[in-house]
Structure formats: C-alpha cells, structure tokens
Length: 176
Image 1 (cartoon, rainbow, N blue to C red):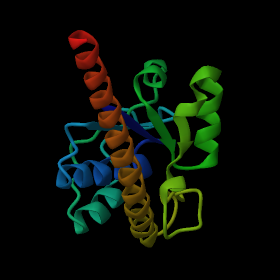
Image 2 (cartoon, rainbow, N blue to C red):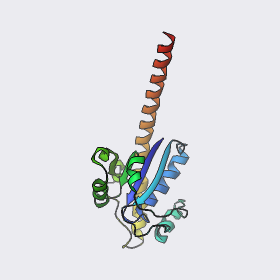
Image 3 (cartoon, helix red, strand yellow):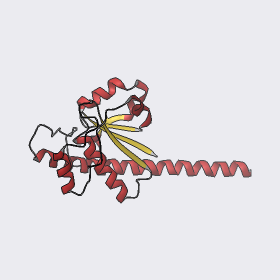
Image 4 (cartoon, one colour):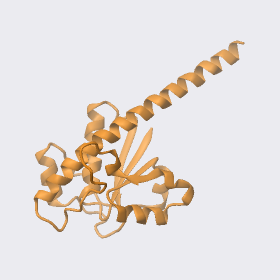
C-alpha cells in the first residue's frame, strides 16, 4: 500500500480537490486498494469544515463529490504514516519541511512536479479569487493527478517485481 497526503493551507480548496480527483482516478484504474489518499492543511483555520462551496461546485461539474470531506490540520504522525506528502505550493512545502524530521524530507514534494501540460510548479490558491480560479485548479489537479498515478503505477509494478523475485529466491533457497 502506498499512502499519499495532499497538503494546502486550509484544506478546503486545493488539497481536497486533489484528494477527490486522485481517489476517483484510482478507482477507475482499480488501484484504490493499493493506494491510500488523504488531504490536510498546514493551518487549522477550517478544521472540521467541508470544502469551500465553490470548490465543491466546480468539482461536482466534473463528477467529483467532495461533500463528505472535512478539513484537518497536518499532524506529526502524518509525517511518519504517509509515503508521499505533496504540497500545493512552495509556502506549504516550506512549512512541511520545517515540521518534518530531516530524515523524512524525501517524502515531501510539490504536487505539480507530476504535471505534464502545465509549466507552473504551484497550484494557485483560488480562495480569494473569482469563480474561474476553481476551474483552473481542477485543470491543473487533473493533469498532475494523471502524472502522479502513472508514477505510482510504475512504483507498484517495481514493488511487485521485487516481491516476486524475493519469493523466487526463497523458494530456490528452501529447495536447494
């Protein structure tokens, strides 16, 4: 099981969008039993709240249902539990780098590093903008989600290959 956490500031716009999009894409590819996704915020402004209504409306127009999600703040145990912690922008990545033990910094990254069609390395925060910003966020998230899932598929195949090789070695060792 690979565990992925998406992180933005308040966990009501960008990171729940990424969680919802990736979760649905994983379901379509029948990988939801092999990859776990969640989202959180670096700040606790909206803990317990549902995603922003504008976020939910934009997502619903593309058949993503975010209504059951509730905002939460990144916890210390997240830094141990998740294999991949992807920030939506450099500010939130910096917060994660400050709270994460140095030996676990390899788990941290920017979600847009998986994008194939956008040159931006950050998903812009649509919270204070106009409605079209939520559609742009979805465009960017869907693109980066495709790249992330492709990367996760390669990782899962490599892990399966390594496990198979180990099983063959164990069988050979026990029969020899």
